[in-house]
Image (cartoon, rainbow, N blue to C red):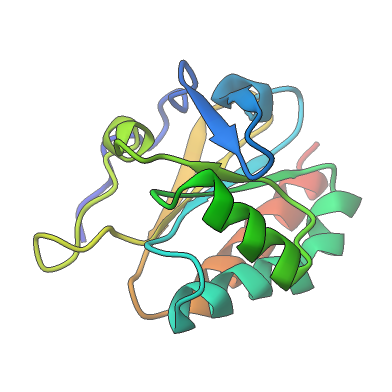
Length: 158
């Protein structure tokens, strides 16, 4: 498996996207503020795998919040669909709309089968450096397991 191009590099943060409330937010507001960040890209709201992944992040949210970590989900879905998904699944973290795949391109998230939006999780340290990337289309809960491990290690190492 090849090393992702962003490994040990500053996480891209110079981008403004809309959250589930339709508010414009700067990606940099979630990155490197002295706390670890988990940014996960997923293909589509309200599909089996994406719901399973997002709900796994929700169910483990106390681990992230106790560690002071930030969790952000990004897909190309429009704001209104994010809002419905956010409310239906009772999420505690923002979902950002990336309709033109700008964030996906900045983070070099690969497509699956050449056309499906990929599923990748970026684990970013308190200084805003990408320390790990988990890329798996089918291991929905693996994204969360890897993120929990990372965040716990970040707390221990500070």
